[in-house]
Image (cartoon, rainbow, N blue to C red):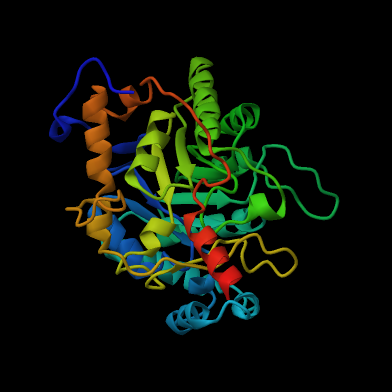
Length: 366
């Protein structure tokens, strides 16, 4: 809802900080999706003021030259794309490439964030720190501080945090109690969201998920309680389901300190695939929980993040939208914006799914 006082959008502060050692001019993170983030994209986004997360379990660390693999996935037809994805991800990850990719990003003078699955976090922590990464993201479909398994070792987040001199961000999470437990392990940031993204089919395959506004508000409440107990402020990063500026603004109003976006960035001229996107769980050999989607090339990355917008549908100039929203609501910065009044009317069926639905309609007609 609008505020009782309005502000000049040019005079609001939308910068992001996480702890004392990591800050960004823009509170925008590029999702760790192979179709979006390669080394060149990470450099481009870093130069614009955000940060793009490189997937250490993806094709960019499996192949010396990942471009032909990305091209093959993008050009596969709907009937064969899952088989193409599975084949592409059979090649093992090479530690040498992890170091080379990180060093290439840092050589450009921009922040470097990397992501890995929990099972590989401990073994890769030393490698990525030596290579110069600024942020270590540990990401799975759902993460908790307590995980039970008889067949493999469970990652202890508190031990990982102690072993890392760089901020550790973990996800994904959607619940107050779970978020609070994770925060108490000493993490610097937490990713919020299960299944909202356009390329994710977790809600359809597993039936598991929570609407993003609800999830963000609950995790933000856990952040505030953690601080009340004497803990440091943990950055809440809403991940997925945001297609236009309005979605981004509502995430911040719900309590987010930053947002992680994938599909909108896949439509940039700088994206690794030039207009395609697929989730990290898509190539799972047993139960894929993602789909490749085609968004096409819409604009430059600068236009998407900073404008000026050439269209009126909210898909460009996310920073301008956020600044204007803060101005209309009378907030000086994001922390103030997190306390605006909201009217909530959830629509979980359509949340973040516009591209999937368009594909399904097309399939039905054919």
